[in-house]
Image 1: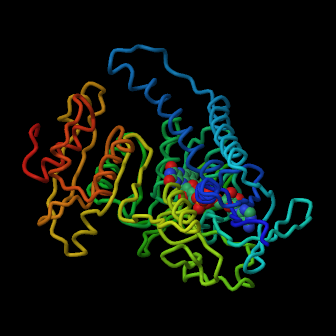
Image 2: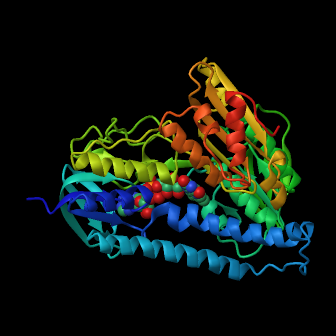
Image 3: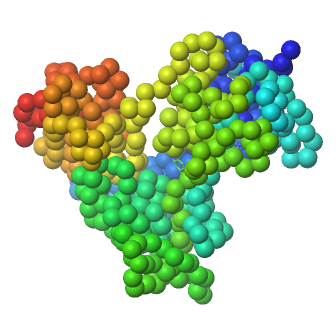
Length: 467
Ligand code: FAD
């Protein structure tokens, strides 16, 4: 008889949530984690520490510039970076401790060490001391997440040339920070250090920041970040970084080739994406197939080509987001318990936690055009929203895209204060196949930022009242 129903390798949002759900459904469950703390990339070096620094740096910025505009005079704020970093570490500790508590509460065994799939039903765990044990299980879940995508020819030392991990842990504010990659992670961490006083330049290969996001949002968002002092070099690539004196010389070329220029930087942050992490997992010998991008190949029920071996989260296809990994974890636990687990990949919100925030769910205008779907647009600027005016947060807009024939909402894109919270009313609406009329006829409290989402829906359905 197997020791476990389920052994999960990796305790990020995919792995630990899958474990909790499986245990709640009565499966005897264990997790294997090689990091000293649970919670994976998200809790240790991703979502959580970055949000702690984004919040703290936003408060610093508000105290320095935002307060006086609404009649609150305070002395010029001083940065205490060690205390800010301690706040970040305390937040991480509380969160990873929370996951350990959940493991105990749900009677999930935690095996610390590197997990290796020996084949169907067998996982070897090797501890730091080199001692190995083998776990017997009916099912194995690979939830090993992702790792930093390296930039060819540029070696990350996490001191001068850093990944997101190093950028969350800098000991002093860099004079000049060069960010390679205008995606979510680069813009969030670029924003943190920009607010704390760095001169930030973002070099992006594509001709827009936030690649897959709605073009309208991306263009306006870049304008706002520029106003905040960030500089952008689009359609450009970094081809080399060399140490020069105490700093760095960064070679930048046009993406299509052409004349090089050399920029100076104190710190370079490489944020060009993440890649699935399968190193040392023994997938070759276990016969588990990967796709052409190194992701574990799965079917619609998260099963690999080997019976009894499943995979979820960043290590499989789809957006590399914590909530996507979590929902896959829940769905898989349900499937393994004989229920009908399911994730609706059309309704996975994406949020950029800058100021203002960017939030999006469903299709962009570009995607609808490419798919030949006729749609109607409703857009409402926060400058016409009473609450936004009251809070001095009038930058941005909400945009609702609805099917021209059926009125079903196909996408919602919000650029503005609180966008990351507001997007969920759109997600719920879309989960239920709601229309722009449904959203427009839903009573929204006044005065709230969310009224702008209602007004945008009204714009798509008929006409906004307040614009
Ligand atoms: P991970 O969280 O990567 O966890 C995998 C775990 O597996 C790790 O703990 C690893 O140590 C362990 N592991 C790997 N191999 C083995 C092995 N052989 N044996 C034992 N253990 C192993 N997403 C959001 O949704 N919102 C955000 O705000 C956000 N911010 C981010 C900010 C940054 C700076 C970064 C880097 C990422 C951010 N993400 C964010 C992405 C998010 O962190 C990932 O999508 C999420 O962590 C994926 O979860 P996962 O469970 O698939 O894997």
